[in-house]
Image (cartoon, rainbow, N blue to C red; front, side, top):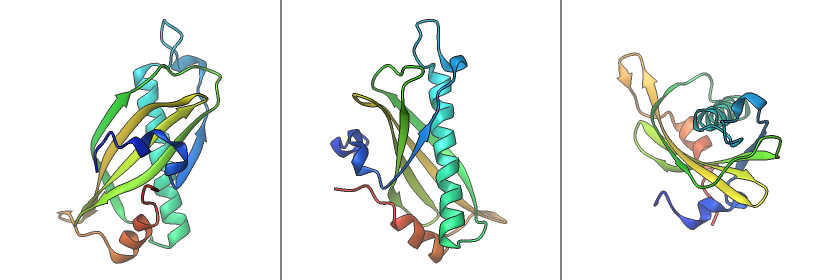
Length: 143
């Protein structure tokens, strides 16, 4: 799936989302959301999504790590404006999966983030357990 799949710009294509609050300290000198603050918003959404998977699907406490993060800034983010992040799983391999996120404010998508997550065993990357794989499959990007 291409990173710039047009579905990624539509909040309704993401099967899971979370509202996130921006903070005054997230602004840069131009009164836009700072790029580092935006990365933090994606991190917060990713962590909440991971907890949702753990808490809602009985997968236990699998260990997974962030292997890669890519962020595309598509528009200016504003402070004190309703903000949400949509989350979808867009690829699943043997020991890793890719999480796609869209950052939304009124008017549309202002950013995209792709994160590769790796399931870890005691000796390094390990196959994704079947229960976790099934749970991840519930969050595919919608057509």
